[in-house]
Image (cartoon, rainbow, N blue to C red):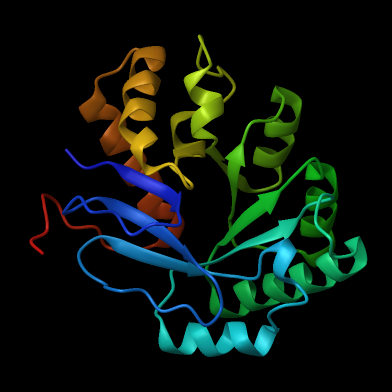
Length: 221
């Protein structure tokens, strides 16, 4: 049984865990083995810290399965106009490289949908840490996005969102890797399915997102 972590900032210690590890431009992973995959992008807070060229340099040196995290955040010290400019540059790069985007978005989901439509983006976008309302989630799904659910938010739910089909969501730890197993166990109970079934469903959705081969069973160090 393998857990899939759709967005984390930490390389997992567990052999064989499937994980998409987020990097910043210039950052080099300590190891690449088994089912470890990487994304790299310019976070809204870092739009004036890193350039698109620095991002491209990292993408040339580290094989990445996705771009991000990137997006929009009104709390950022970076101006909204600058955030959108850098975000659009990463959308163009995602389309050019044919890899999905991992999105950081705070309270600007409809702006996100507007930008997706205006750029005619065709690659899937994974909305990380989603904890929004059903109507927002449905609009994002209709626009071609997948939802990676906030672990803390999900653990506080007593009913699994009925509007979320199995193939439209992923589970993540973000910066709290210790929550991944509790999140899986809680989600399986809410969905009324076995933990093993949930793991397989998550693996299928993740594999379709990043179009990568996933090995079965633990991977030796």
